[in-house]
Length: 150
Image (tube, rainbow, N blue to C red; front, side, top):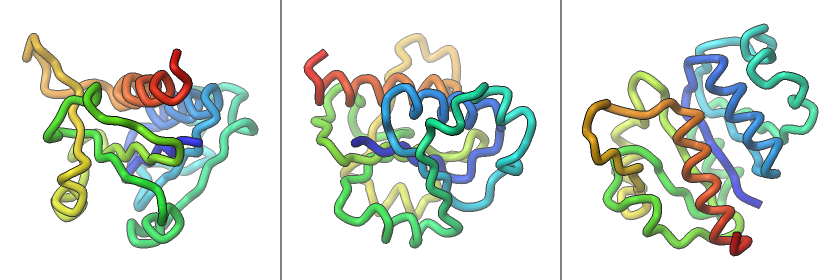
């Protein structure tokens, strides 16, 4: 099983769409730190439609708590990384970690996992970043492709 982790997500529809991706793929969703919404938020549920019962969601108050729970899994930070996500060799049990929409991951986390940091190339350089749910979908499906030889 793959893990998707969101550090302090701020926008309910993004998290709802990521939850839907996790339901569709069987990935476990980890929500870490301070959330920019309540988990019973209407817009969060609207984005996840009726898939919330199919999502394996784990809530972590601190990053340290998350690390303890995910111990034994390799954490990939997806942000402004050292290598494109297409060069990563994913394994079952890996965790894809994404930062908050407005500020990304904390510097301490980026430094700690610098050897496992990935980026999504944007050759046109027309935008600063992609939507969180889009980014999760891109990298999650590449990991699944590698694991299942799709």
